[in-house]
Amino acid sequence: MTRKEIEALTKRVCSFYEDAASRSKKYLVYGTTQFLPRSGRPHKLSDKKLNATVKSINNKTGVTQREIARRRKVHHSTICRTLKRRTSIVIRERKKAPKMDSYDQEKRAQVNCGKLYRLILNDCDIVMDDERYFGLSGDNVQSNQRYYTANALTTPTDLKYKKKKYSPKTLVWMAISSKGVSNIYVHKSVDAIGEKIYLNECINKRMLPFIEKHHKNDNYVF
Image (tube, rainbow, N blue to C red; front, side):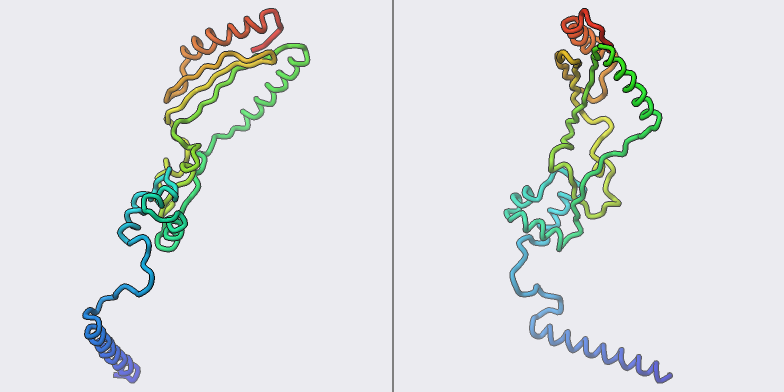
């Protein structure tokens, strides 16, 4: 054996006897060779409660730290500090789903706006209708705008992004002009309204009476 190999072997043998002596002394004093809990103030959340909390909020939305604190009977700052120091849970803000953008749509909007502007200059009233869909999934609630996760790469897509394709929604429709506003139509559905509903409920029952009342003898465009 070379001198270097002899020194390495000697070091291994000495380390073995030192570790054995240290374990023997620890067993004689404490009755075990395992690591014991350190002295000092214990955690307000035990490992069992902390693991249950992490499991209940990981990849979840609609949960606030104050709600967790009320369930665990601690202050919300304790929850914030514990999640930061003892877990890998991170609070992330939900993103909006990317929208399709088209240069042709922008050009058409510019051309049509110019046409409407020229009609207004010729004393022509513009009657227009518009609708707005309000989602019922609760994405606009503050607690649903963020989510908890231990790994952003494994987080489901429907949790990262706010909008779902077929989430329940409420439609609010109305017609408006410079002389007033029509009766409002409210429709609750999962899908967008169809041709029959739009024709019967919006045009026949609300748009035409509105035009008859305010623009019967006027020059208008719809």
